[in-house]
Amino acid sequence: MKSLPTKIVSLSARITMVGIIAIVLFLYLQDTQEFTYFYREQNQLFLWDNQVISKTLLTIGGLCKVMAQVLVQYFVLAKMGAVITTLICLIGAHFLWCALKNLCNNWFMIPVCFLPFVIYNVYLMDNYAKYEGIIALCIMAIFFWIHTLLNNQNNYVRLGISCILTLIVYLLFGSVALLLSFCVLIYEFILSPKKGLLFAAPIILVLAVGLIAVNQAYLIGFGQAYGMQHYTEYYFEPTGFYSLSWIITITLIPIFWLFGKSKINALWLHSALAIILTAFLPYLYNTLGDNHQDKGMYSLERIIHYADTEQWDEIIALGHSETSNYINLNYLNLALSKKGQLLEKLFQYEQNSSQAVFLDYQQFTDIGVLRARQYYQMGAIGASQMNAVSAKMSMAEGSPSMQQLIIKNYIITGRYKIAEKYIQELEKTWYYADWATSMRKYLYNDKAVESDPELGMKRRDLPKDNETFTIYAGIYNDTQTVMTANPDESAASDYAIACMLLDKNFNYIIPFTQFNYENGYWKELPERLQEAILTAQEQNMDFAKQFGISDEMIERFAQFRKDALNLRHNGGAVTQLASRWGNTFWYYMLRNKGK
Image: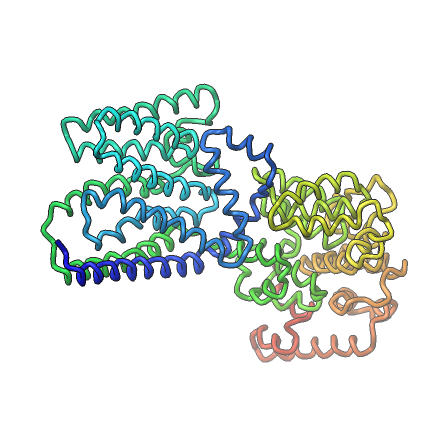
């Protein structure tokens, strides 16, 4: 029997070890999945509605799904995703240890119980993996522990209770019940090889219930009935890697039994093994995560979060490092537009076509969200609404940010009754209820809408002709419709000009400028547009001057041409002009000559 000091040392070591694991796990999750947690929260709209919750609970695994949705709604708060996930891992590992310590009570084995949960967190780097999967794994550990508490009961009593527990887990938490039934079988077989095979009954029960569920169309297929597909998006086919956490959970049972048979009693050896196993957890997570995580997608999740929270300066700050694809560039230019700097800083970034400003539509939900925001910024409210509704519907559980945009769009267009319906729905959420209630002051109140700086401006953007409400006819036509309705909407003209300049589209630049300048939509041409006009009409300065282009701008153009000619004569690189002329259309034309 251990002496009191030895017990105190052992307890202190356990607490310290678990504390270190928890802290390190939290730090890793926060560092690698911070924006994935935010992204998950924005891909569901959980409503505290009895009818909605009841409907979900009646599905197989429904309780697990509701639990996940309840927890994920708090991911909107900073660090809360990592905190909640760490707690789930701690709870799951604790009960797995409580179940397995009957086979081996050596405390240095505690870190091993975290293995399935650490690996599952690697899956959660992928947005196809649903959050309820890690909750189901935690629940499995709890029910497995409950089964081990029945060791003193009659075999048949334990078998009956085990079958009931397995059925409960299957109906409430999904296919993880199959993992539970295998754990029970192996555990019982180790304790009593002769009678252990009786406990194959829970496995047969799960297989039978799953077969019925598939045949009756309660579940889509056998991958969902018996495997990890229950915890991924229905259209995603999990690879063998997605079964690793379950396989390791099963494997831990014989491993604990083998170590329980060993004669490892030295405290120093226990301590050494505890340190090694504890250090192995972050190494495993880091190694698997580097190979599994889509770095490009995580970058986009970061940008989307900043857009959701309107942190436009943060997106701009990422501008030079996150320009690897058109979606990121579109968000960068949206942020510049929000700050009124789209044309001013257009050429400060590596972009060479209008796709960087306004990406062609693709069947991709995140692009639908992006376009809804872009059209709203430009004042094309009908097109914004079409994209917002489509994006929200493409997300199985809804989207808070798109719901908010839909509400604003309906208020702008005066469709107050529909807006009220969406407000009532959003008022059933935990985090967005106050915002939804704050929008009620605009319902059936045109004066309040028109006096609001944002909503009033967007209402003035609406075309007078209802037939062109959606104005979904391409970037140039759409922005022109907005500018005709409301010349003060500079974001619309900025977007059109940016696309024209990046495409070097002189077929549009001249007539577009003439139409808007002659109709009084512009009092003064933006500098970048002036540069384009001078480029197009360098042999006809009188034509350029009719648009109010100053002598100073013409002199700057002459100086640029002089610098460019000197550079050519000296055989210098085009980039030598960047320090003085890098943020001009002229330099952009020279740098992209022939492209």
